[in-house]
Length: 145
Image 1: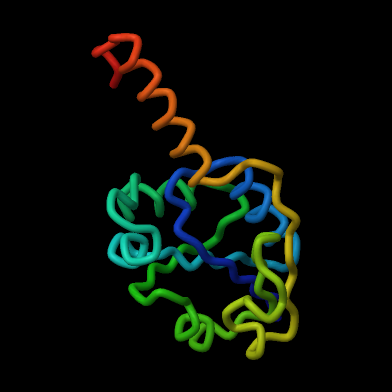
Image 2 (image 1 turned 90 degrees about the vertical axis):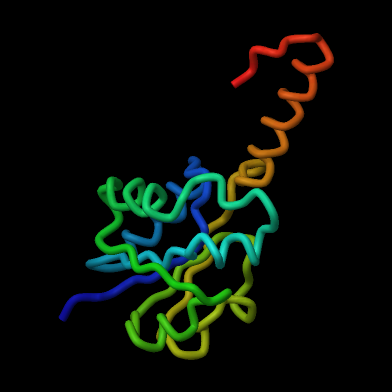
């Protein structure tokens, strides 16, 4: 019987931190299913201006990774109903979670927390881009973007 692993997220700007979690998740079993927040869900969770990357593009990027077997979108703020329907053996999340804060921890056999890279997150990437754009604007460079 195949061991199913689940993780989820917005994956708005795919970065090396995401890749670390996804590859670690895949190593936990035979197939990795990624729950992907819809655009509406991302906007509710992250605020105006998000997502930066539309759902279909985020999904294609994830499916292009060798470690990802399936991507399933969800509209809710949490993937609890999706987890209940998939019934994975393992849930994997990043180190910004602890066991008690992982949605679905009480309905799976195992939860794995993957340590995060320091200073790598979508929010930090967005802030660096904004900071750079503001700096360029102050220099009078109107040719950004």
